[in-house]
Amino acid sequence: MLQNMWAIFMERKDFFLNLLWEHLEISLLAIVIAVLFGGIVGIFISEFRKTAKPTLGVINFLYTIPSISMLGFLIPFSGIGNATAVIALTVYALLPMVRNTYTGIANVDPAILEAAKGMGSTRLQVLFKIKLPLAMPVILSGIRNMVTMTIALAGIASFIGAGGLGIAVYRGITTNNAAMTMIGSLLIALLALAMDLLLGFLEKRLNKRSRKAKKVNHIMGISTLLLCLCVIIAALVSFNKKDTLHIATKPMSEQYVLGEMLDLLIEQDTDLNVELTQGVGGGTSNIQPAMESGEFDIYSEYTGTGWNMVLKKEGVYSEDLFETMQNEYKNSLQMQWVGMYGFNNTYALAVRREIAQKYNIKTYSDLKAVSSQLIFGAEYDFFEREDGYDALCETYGFTFKKTMDMDIGLKYQAIHQGKIDVMVIFTTDGQLSVSDVTVLEDDKNFFPSYLCGNVIRCEVLEKHPELMEVFNKLTNVISDEDMAQMNYAVENEGKEPREVARSFLKNEGLLK
Image (tube, rainbow, N blue to C red):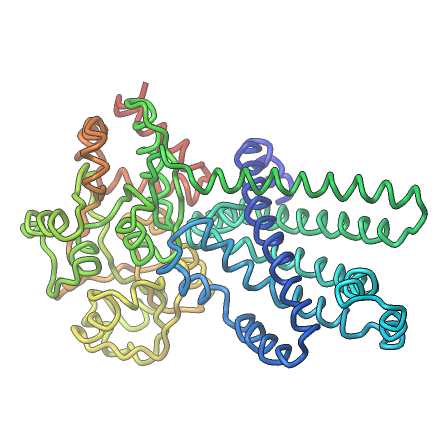
């Protein structure tokens, strides 16, 4: 494993180092905001003690909110991406900062404060000359804990399309690449450890009181401040890129490959820059609102999903409804479907082979008789879809013993380990051909058609009509078998999505 990790890291060194830099930008921006704001709040409640209890109560409450929930709550207000990640990280970083600042100041010896007041010191002089210097060891301890926690927690930012090493972790999970997951996790741990050691060194330096030590401390303080400002400015500049085409993908191998195809062809055939946000957690439920707000410009979608989940239409989608759907997208959402790839990635149900053989299960209707004994697993958004779990159970009369929400990339692992018995799969899954499962027949034709294409904002297409050349090239170029093979190459052969995309486009004569 270690040898494999090292080989992948050296092969994709630029990729990981770029993620490391993004991780540092996001974390440091949140840390600086938390230190400044949290420090001010901590000082305020220490000076006005009546405000301490309710303030700490509110911060404690925010701290108890699960990180995923916090991100989901913030998305409608601040959108997808780094800004939301920074806000969430800042909220979680506030508690240790506020609490340690308050505790450090509150525990200063009252006798010292009385002596200072007796000598004629003003309230501000007491605060800055007595309280803060004496409280500094406790405050620095809080900062060290907060920094370590923030860097570790920043890994979850990739779930909402933000940058950082969480992208490597999440991509490794969704593409069945354990080595990539381990590299991302290890780099996060090393970054957190390095920052902790650095702060520990600075803490020791601050305890030295000689004239020479104070001079060195001032220089180090100014240097650290300038470094932080440079990183923050770089982060803010990167947050506000305007002259870029923003493409999003869902967290699945297939989407990673399609995103890379778009990136390669757009950069080859146009003068546009592309920013590719891979693996946005929640898929359509998070990408579509970001499209509507203008944060993303293009993403690959499936016709059945667009009909049922985006337009909220009832009934089973069929491709003869495509024109109706296209008109509603244009009129209601100011978006349109372009570049229909040609493959149909519909849903299906798969059962562990031993169970299928034991109960002679071949169709969905056969499954009904034993569903009460089985555990059902699917990705998160399947349980929320109009054509998802509830509708499936109503159509076939399923009453599963238990359901489990899980990431797309973990379903096959879960069924192999016996954690689930039945799962929703995609007909182009790369792992399907090497998995010990039986795909059942949808004998009532419950699942609609899911032809894959690109959804683009009309504003973007009007501004850049040259994009149509790219989409025309991709129309009807990928079959179901082609997509399954590409997914297999990513998930089972450990190939990079960009490598797989490049190889396919070259074979089709679309890439120079």
